[in-house]
Image (tube, rainbow, N blue to C red; front, side):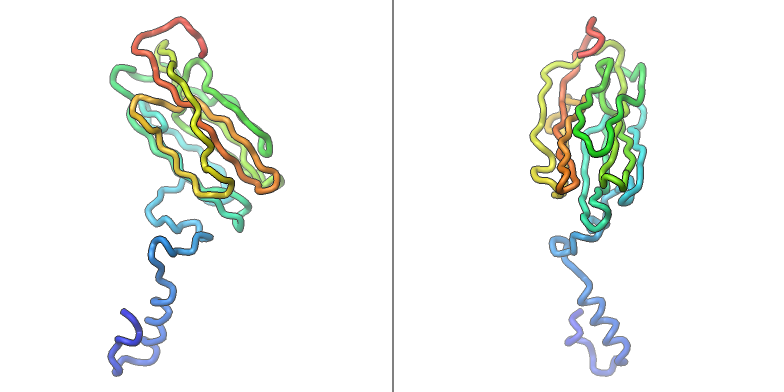
Length: 207
């Protein structure tokens, strides 16, 4: 309620309190974006400058990645991830592992070995370089092989922007990513590698 609409009989203290609440209430699109929780219902897996370890439930793969950048919080991002059950035809994962790790402050390209699919992410923040190191959790499904692979465009479109990536079509999976790092803006852009998987086993150990 606008303070001007309050009854005259209300105590002065209540009028002041109501005015403060009115001033500090923002519509969603006007909420101050330097606040780390401005998206109220987003399940961030970390706080700024903190490490995290996220793994999809068994039999699920990563399908959505979202992050929000803050210059005030160590040039860092908070992250959230979503998983989805893989198609019945793939069967159950036969092996899962943590793949290669990158070093903070460097460009990085990583593809799950052994034809694996990305099913988790872990990261540690390093204040000395205002950047993170990254590692993918990969799962292999019997001897299925990837095909029809392609790379996405940069995500986010520009450094320091909010990032929101969702796999565009069911049946595609994230197999890895490449990143570029800006030493000036202290942020990363990502290109995700997406693939389909064969319906039958194949003889390629890694593709």
